Image (cartoon, rainbow, N blue to C red; front, side, top):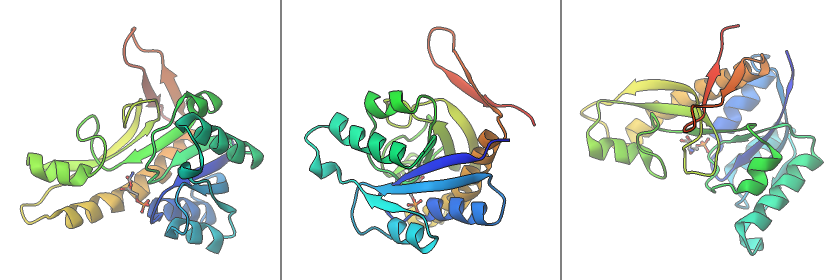
Length: 209
Ligand code: GRF
């Protein structure tokens, strides 16, 4: 088993970050969060990191002329802190090859839908608008698309007739926290295998222990 050296990228509230920090603290996740980087200053996620004694930085995308230049600054910050695996936990920017090549198949994202349904923003509202009866969350490897990379784990929740977006968001978010930790622990246990794919989609599996 390897202890994962994690860098967590955030843009907002950071409840998924908190789930990671709590799991590490309780010995349920064999990892160390080396640094938390936000593209927005002053967000709650940065405070959560500092409250746990974790280094927290802002790298604002607004300070860079291109997405590649912003990603190069992210790569530098993550490498400076010895990061080997990157978690996008509510990070609201698409990555370019600059980040993807620096951390090849070592960037995971959590998304609040059962992908490939409802990628992008407001996934919970998209699910309600469509009228699906089952929603959920997905942890996947990141590629250049919006929520398109190889799926690692998913968890479903029911959609109730009485749900509004806030109620569905809360039900999914609760599952996100457990799913993200479970996926990262499976990676720490060396169970991740990325399959080449037959000329089209690449897939991933988290084999049995
Ligand atoms: C989560 O729903 C996550 O799936 C999505 O953004 C939200 C972030 O929440 N990508 P938090 O910042 O972890 O509380």
